[in-house]
Length: 342
Image (cartoon, rainbow, N blue to C red; front, side):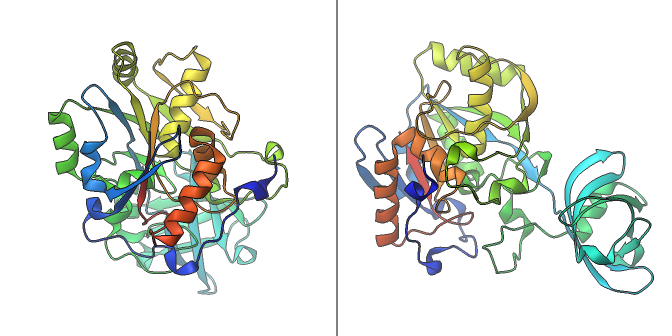
């Protein structure tokens, strides 16, 4: 299956650069996965499309303000650091720019010395192992000094860090937001609960590999990045109960989808408490075992994310929906509009 089958024309001006003032005021395209029919609505009207007994599954990961700007101790050279993964204690795998200036033993200062780091190892492609030094609690220092690692297609500065977090973000560890969840407000979630819709939480820490383009012609040769996931016993029991009672399981975002499908695939369609790393790659031909529907944003051409959406709703239906979204001037990507697939 060729990557070019998932290409479409996207005018650059449709890439949303800033979030809307009101989260739930974004547009909502509703796509019928069986016949490809499309409805146009607003996200706050999501209540019109879900039923009592259905369950929305949300990813409660919290994005780290993982981009740090500092200076090299001996030369004062400007250095940018992106935290990728905590390894042990205060040692992190990072990306450093310009990497050639930072060798083993180099020291970087951030925030007038509130935070410092020494390079304890070098990796390929600008990767560096940094050991951080600070007083107090690392995550509090990071909140004070760090910036959000926005996707490369967003050029505008983000004024309010919390607008790149979901209102229910809790578990620290993501390099990017699970953006389908950015449309929810506390009020909308409360209204859904009142009408009898279940709300469940899983965790998947989104890696920067989510933005990595597919560089092979045949998608079966693409290697997915692995991401950490977790499901509690409480969520597993809730989801099994919803399924047994005939309710629909609707994942919020591709990250929730990949977590649910990873767990259900290992357990004959059942949900169990589980955690670990997943590199599941979902593309057309995949047989879904966990979900009945999905809320998602509009994704990059030829990306693994549009392939996942196409696996659920059919490639031709999805590409028609995307062409319609372009014609109707929907906003695309992280701060863009939403699609509900049922």
